[in-house]
Image (cartoon, rainbow, N blue to C red; front, side):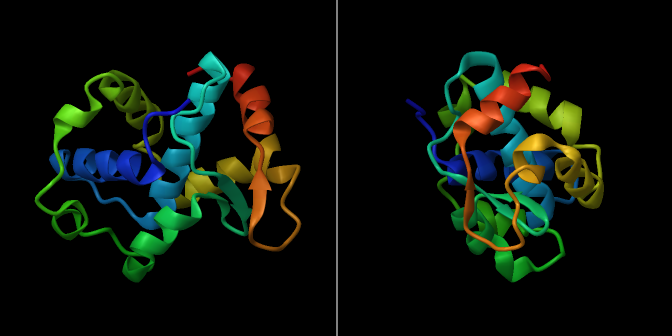
Length: 150
């Protein structure tokens, strides 16, 4: 059973990007969430967060997180506005090293490069049918990432 919500993990990535003075768009955030969930499922069989991941035209998406930041369009998310006053690193000590590993592997890639990458991978490619709200099963994600360790 996951102990985090995707929105919590999203806020961690936003805070991390801010600390590195890196820009983070909603598109890139979605792909980081997907890879964080995927590698966790592949390595442990357990999800990082319980929120579902859907296959949308631009790749895997956590709908609630997408809607929370869609006001930024293609631009960078304003970290100060997104994090507010209640964000604390202390909530992530048990998974911080893991999230840093995800960032180290994927954070330097452009949002569009990550989008293109997800389009070549089975979980999205096998289920996308041109519409939104098509759920990618945790099992499909786990199965793919079990063969692609972090």
